[in-house]
Image (cartoon, rainbow, N blue to C red; front, side, top):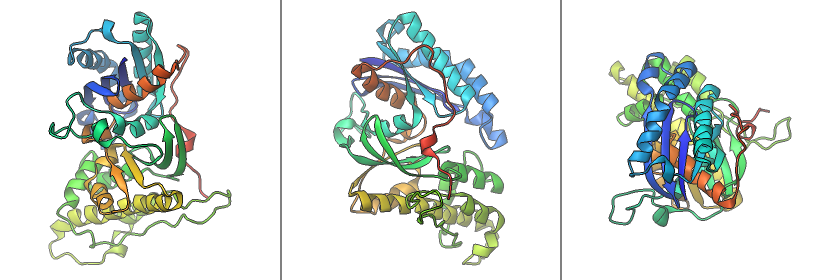
Length: 360
């Protein structure tokens, strides 16, 4: 079933076509240059750029594999969570496309789509093709633990099926990607923060600063066990406002401080994620981990997980870690084949409550 997937939840205008779990096209138009002057995503700019680009991006997603609108058999689109104005652009375009072609339409959850990305494959995927993320090579069996890490969300989930996800732990304040962006913005490292800090950290000393890890494993007043949850506000405060309190090694060359700050911050930020993930793996007995979201491309996270010999860890290829239309089309295809449909009255929602907690 050829499904057109549309993704406009934040600042990536993306569209793709998936057929039987195979990626026929995957087009992503990034808005990074337009948001870089503000060192973060400006919602109004994002929604306006989506409005200007959505037609051309979808047109290219169809033309790349030699398809026309008449070849599309279903439309999937991200409806939540995300920036409301951006979501509405993609949602209304998808509705109009489906209505005009009289084909089924489905609205999907952006976070579930990230967890589905690892099940997609390319037409020429295989051991000798050089393609990564091919479903016939990497596709995980259910259940697995999902590590969802992005600029807006950080969560550990038990995934029993494409639409059966139980959130075990999540952030109580900032998401990990948000923390990367805020630290990078404060020190003027550049934008986007995650990629810049990852690059700086490669030549820095991760032991130059010893930043604190949050303690959230105790049961709070809400009666919930927070042993799998994350918190990044304390780390962000330590790096930005209390840097010298956590210095372990004095730098002979002050110019190298930026690299050491990046490396030490990244080591702690990744450590916070892994602490909760390893607890979840030990408690559930599930040894397969699937990562998703933009931070899944982080080299430190990948290398430290690779060192954990007891876990089978699956990462989508880099182009499927960030926001993309292929993951939306792939997930949407599963719903549509099951007979699910969304009404034309479907609307967008900026938040999904299950992926964020309050503490205590």
